[in-house]
Length: 238
Picture: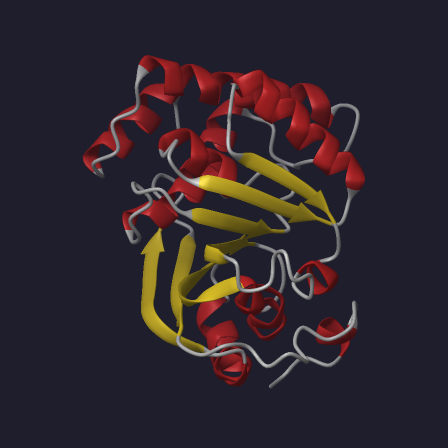
């Protein structure tokens, strides 16, 4: 996906990027490639592929959920900032918090946010399990996002406890999404969530399968969740 295609295809979806926003994406790509030589941030470094598989793919959540209003968003395991930083560039009013277990990635994100001139962004070096048990963060966010982090039974336990009652958990998945959703139904319910929207589509150009699940939080999460670090992965709720 060329930069021109990126701009025009977002415009078709009602997202009109200013010259400044397009410049932020250009800088993002350059900083990503530069830092990727020092540490492993992504296996995808070709410009057209980054614009398609990282930038456009991240923003696809906004085709099905309104990010245009001020809201607090937490991104669990964002790695190099996906999906929340591309969304923040497009929708400057959102307040973004990213939690990641690798401190090197947090260093990259601090540098990136500074270079892109982003405000209302916070980065936390922590395990998702302990982060979600911290009273400062537990059930404090309007939206939790996760893209390519863990299978749905694990992801539900890590993410839904961070969402306010009445808030939303958005899980961005690849081709195995439907199978994962079936596996994750019990965990979603246990955490207080209910599946509100199930969207399947193909990423343009390469036509790879994508699934987005929008889960509303209707009840508070029981205090015992998430369990101790590593436990959700070893003993998923199924």
